[in-house]
Image (cartoon, rainbow, N blue to C red; front, side, top):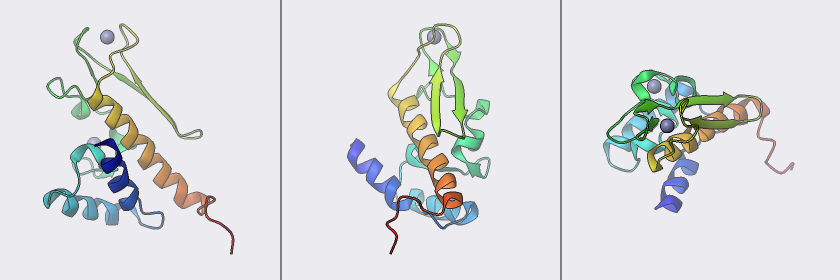
Length: 129
Ligand SMILES: [Zn+2]
Ligand SMILES: [Zn+2]
């Protein structure tokens, strides 16, 4: 399952696309069931890259346990390092609080961060012709 979702996220990662374009693409893909909401790199509520608004309380969900520590009934704190691309989530009370949902959210944040960085870096991973 992870392989499939990562593949679709990679396929939709648009090195040269702007946020509004990807937002619309992901809306369409989600509507037809080709993209899981968890794998989106953009947020249709905030209209931003997911890593830019994941700290919003709207991205906390005690039912699905997105950004939620069940043990402490506390929202996880998000830490994003735009320079290194590191994204972590942890419970401010117990220091843990991970869940499958939060792990996917973290992965989506890393991917959106990478998409933004990839654009400005000019695709450093591509082989020079
Ligand atoms: Zn959002
Ligand atoms: Zn906790």
